[in-house]
Length: 121
Length: 146
Image (cartoon, rainbow over all chains, first blue to last red; front, side, top):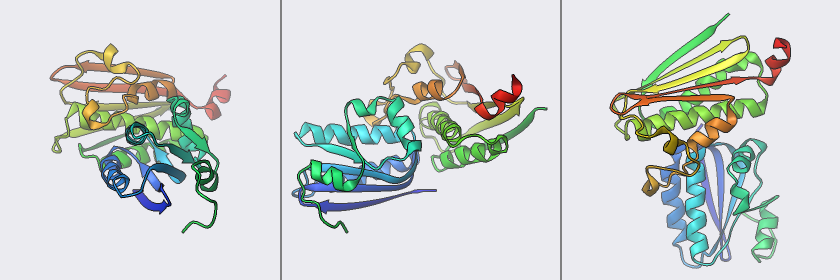
């Protein structure tokens, strides 16, 4: 199973929705498309929705950490949401939540970043 | 009885998913928990990725050898490459250490393998290659063995 990536922008927030499996093979494409989206005008904060991500390994952690550092360097925030138990195990083990915020769902993440909660496309 | 399977594949990143899915399918006969299956898929992915990017430095015409065996409910996974080998295994195993920081590697590969498996043995010789041998006893079979 490969990786599908969907980007959406809500006000100044880039929402990244990942579906499928994120490994080394998928990591390079994800990094490139994600960086391109980050360079769009008006994008400041990032929400990563992991609801449909069924697998991730340390290559995925590398991509997450890389984007976190870029967002952080500009004084902005990156929030993760809707993580599955399978993927959560890797994040817990690697101590990722000591630096990244995790919330239950996209609506909570938007609220945290100051975007008024209403329907998302 | 020992039940074993071997898979040899070209050192391209497309085959990382093939490797972990094949092992998951093979060990499914032991009825692993979802958590155990995820752990096993993750460590196979880590070891095969290491072989491709570190062992072979992304040369696409080499071979990775994967062996998986089930013996008395214990799973043994061996991943071998004939690549450049590891100069210093202790340094390579350190959490967050990576020889390729410019490639955005997390440096967590060996740490993940050691956490998700019961035992991890690394044998490596510069210029000859690297063999990773990992074992794990499943909870479903552990009770039967006692």
